[in-house]
Image (cartoon, rainbow, N blue to C red):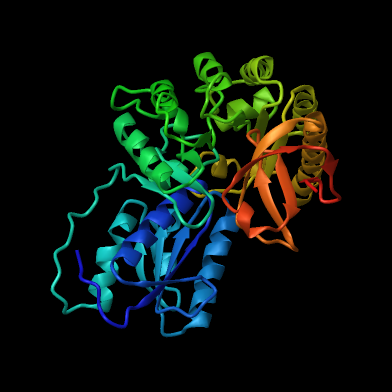
Length: 434
């Protein structure tokens, strides 16, 4: 490793996209802090800027380019490192932008500290760690940035859905071990963090290459008394088994909160997307959860405007979504990703106006479902973990089942769990506690 030096260089990190990116960026920034660098906010003047990128949508790529331009404008002399999924797919495009001195793909980004040191201290004596290899699993978790920690337990994906570029950017599915996840969770708990979110690209695939399962991991974490609240960030419906749902339903640690990607509420489109389930299986997962946890939060991802989606397909989707008991939805318009199967379906593309109109309908439906879910929780008592924000004089937090709550800002509430009664829904559709 490198020795800390006088007059440390300053470095700012910015992450785009998923919770996995956030966990990895936090892990990387700690390496620099531990070696004497001054960590700055991304909107501050810094010597070095690191941008952790996403390629899920064209909008994410646009945000990446905008972040590079913003960093260069803040300090034209700064060195800019662009890391992660976007460089994995389009390294030449990124390396040609002003200020960019380092472009590292998904696995190579974990060598970031060594690579930065080579640039800023080329003549310094150094002992480099062995570089990470493609498809190595590199664990990471966040701390200090929020009142919860995002713990990465899995990476990559073997599903190759027809619209998705993530397998090309992040590689094959691989996982941490149960023993190491438990060790990391204990360390996080020892720091006074009250909630852990298990993150990954396809969490349900956890352990499949080393003879372990997500079910076994859940049981191991659940049997570790000193751990805080735990959430699973997202899990595919075909990998969300009855035993997993049943364990979470009686768990002292796992919260009654499920994020289950749907992507399309029409079997025709699910087949075209090459998803591994149909609407019947998805409905059965929702009904199983509701039978055991009537007030659980159940969220879904939905993509509208996929190539070939007809008016009849969209009507089927809306009817299906109305018929299942979701708490809310994340709605996305289809975004063409190069080199995916869907990107070659040119003659079936849905025009932008139709996509926007359909997106608006789904957003309205999601808002109604969320209001219905909140009204169902009205009058109940819940334990809220308060965060650190001060937004217009209010501090916010979330119940076990992910209902958002606010109250007058009090610094003494930060990172505290308090029992509250949910009574009043404010104008911003958040429960307000007097």
